[in-house]
Length: 299
Image: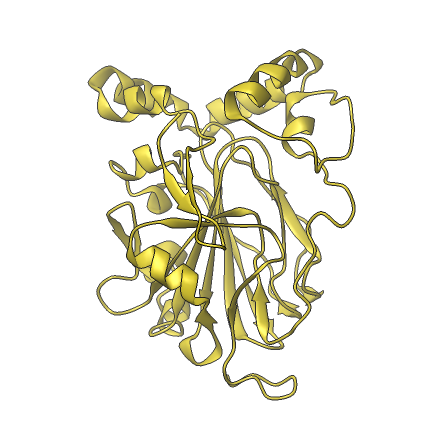
């Protein structure tokens, strides 16, 4: 396991990562590993892995994976999982992810390890020393321009997280925009070598939210499968309603918000400035709108 350092919302230090790192060190930091990676990151390989992980024989992997990744199932619905994929997309007991209902506060769309970054002309997104522009992330210069001066929130999911995600606020969403690509892992080891978000398959929607203006919510898949399953096309949505899920593979969600509509919570800003991710759960507050005025946010 890698030795990542996180903080919880109380400021306590948490060490460790549920992402095994031995293979990743080999794959990204050696010549043979990078040659093998050219095969592993292709969608065709991911399709073969996906078929296996949905088969009954894959259930034999579950116990070992739980132990190796130090996963607790105490919040999960008791179940005998018919396949490894069914285990990975496991459901939680009712009430285990309460969603923030104060509309002045933005709800986290998922479990994850969070960093935040202000969006400016030069450094838009910086994860483990790798820089991204909003334009290259979206492949849409016009939409990217709307978020200059705003905030990017990166939520990195690991194996111990709940891999379903929700809408962070009420509003109306557009159709999903799919961007094809090869599938790289989203672990810290990989981000030291590869511009992950330019290479990964990803899908995003814009949400014209009731309380935070326009939001981009993007899901990013990763090696070996990282399949993104979004449930809805264009429609009105409610905060806390399930938007979709990730099937097996590392995964990340990115939110883009406008400065005049949103400010991240102070602990997220301070921890990100120190290069430390903050552990959050689906539904927790992650920021607020200072301009909230009785249900109408400044746009």
